[in-house]
Length: 319
Image (cartoon, rainbow, N blue to C red; front, side):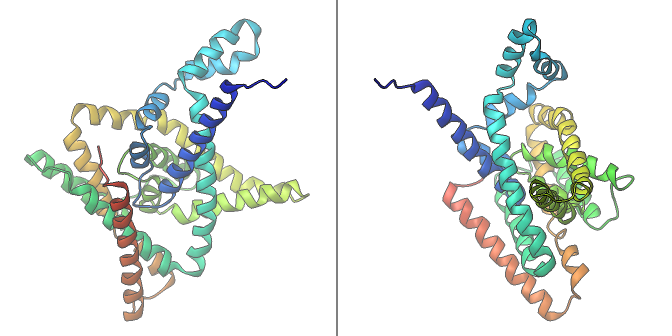
């Protein structure tokens, strides 16, 4: 006699759906100009994502870690439900899968075809600023001022006039805090922040090296090859966790208090970031007529791709 376990089927379908959501969101966040938060909005799980992320507190995390004790398992189960880990875990695994795959492609193309990849990114960012900017209103001097400040700040960072304090581990940690916070905000791409901070190519290469070294280790490779890129990845993730419980909350509070001005500032950051990928091209090629023409052609491809995506999904909205 066969028994049908519909509850198990439903749970597995939910896990698969969340994993698919993560693939879509991770792909978006790994490409500058496309926001994972926007994808979450379009697919209808943004509210659930924000509720789960903002529910994260050290107390709940500690309750889950203490779940090994029989008397504390009830509280651990409650904390797991409050954090919606049944949704967040497969979502996160899907995001990591997509980011790892794209990071490997980007790190390869950055070395072999920098004009193509960074020209394409320039077009994606420019088109993203246009599509998101259409819905904004500059209804007061405050809106205009926020737009000017955001654009100027992004341009100064892209030109290395303003940079992160310190270097090495400090920069990686802070980049993780800012970039992963941006992943859950509609309109802002985490990879765009990394490009703006000059960390995108480096971190993509480190992630790819870590994954390859980990795979080699399973086949008898060297542990030492895992340590260096693994340390970078760990620092980035640690920064991301801190950012999710600090920076993301600050931005969400700003959106709740003065949504219009905050959105103008966020979208202006994208607009000011348009020249950022061009610095990666300049590091490998002189700005000859041929280089400029090829960059413009690939930027046009990026613009067309973003506008086509906007058309297919029915429009982007920073809200």
